[in-house]
Length: 422
Image 1 (cartoon, rainbow, N blue to C red):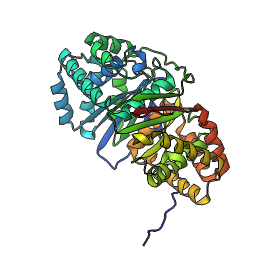
Image 2 (cartoon, rainbow, N blue to C red; image 1 turned 135 degrees about the horizontal axis):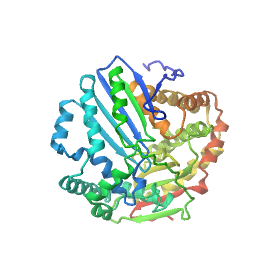
Image 3 (cartoon, rainbow, N blue to C red; image 1 turned 60 degrees about the vertical axis):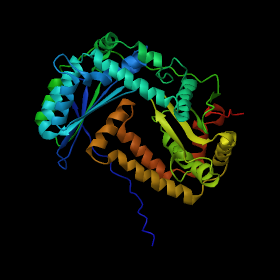
Image 4 (cartoon, rainbow, N blue to C red; image 1 turned 90 degrees about the horizontal axis):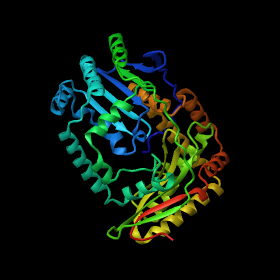
């Protein structure tokens, strides 16, 4: 017997309190007593675009756990383990995202350790050598995968080899990175003047005071973030020959307008129907009916200054051109033929349900707040508009906006495998 279908209700957008660490730096907070954990999130708009060699920008941030002038990597790892703390650092072209999660009872000493790493990292040569070897090994594996090859070359073609969004790590970048490069980058670009902060979980006033006190000890260099100009690619297609591969990876898409645009949710509904979930048009045709791939999907990727829409799949090499043609047919069908009420209703419910993940618990609420704030988007305005459009958009508006956001003539198509597209 099929269970009853529960239609997701429009959620209330949680209230996130905004405090000030100084006269302009915000601390977003969301408290809950349902956990013994406290999480601190920091977003710093000083990613690897500030380095001519992207490895320098990535390593300078990622290797703060490798050693300070007082502690080596083993001592740091043991101290984090003693506190039951998790410290994660991810670096993208525009920003650095740092998260510290630990038990409330150990948050203050764990915070002391984090700030020691941010202000006193010394990048030991031995640790740098190990990091370079590990990164070389990962890169060697990734460079054998047609999926990775297609993905890297897609962004390179879309933005240009010298654009931070189109630049990818090469062996020479790793080889040429030296300890002095990391020290110089940290002195010049470890700047917290434009940073965003978030605190979630079972914190108290003492923890807030401690975060504020520590913040005032961090470098405040007043580096102005800058927009990166993106141009339309001159070349629309590229094939990378990989004769040893039995499959060909397809990566295709284009630059799109930002999610800051008020009509973005109309496009988002269309992209979900077309290829954004397991019941999508692309998945039904290319995977279920034609059996050309184990999976195909479309998605949006939001950089700070440019958004991208893309389709990705791996297909049997001799079916590459056929698969691309079928994607084109589905595209033409989607923008020209009405969407049925049943399909649209199903996607409305799916999107209303998945949107709830952004508000699923204190940690997700604050992570989403920092992500949207970093992109220059008001959480309240965005989600109110999103929920309204999900409930009220008609099928013609959805198809028109989809065609407007992703016209086929803008498509960049990259394939990696042993069959070149025609």
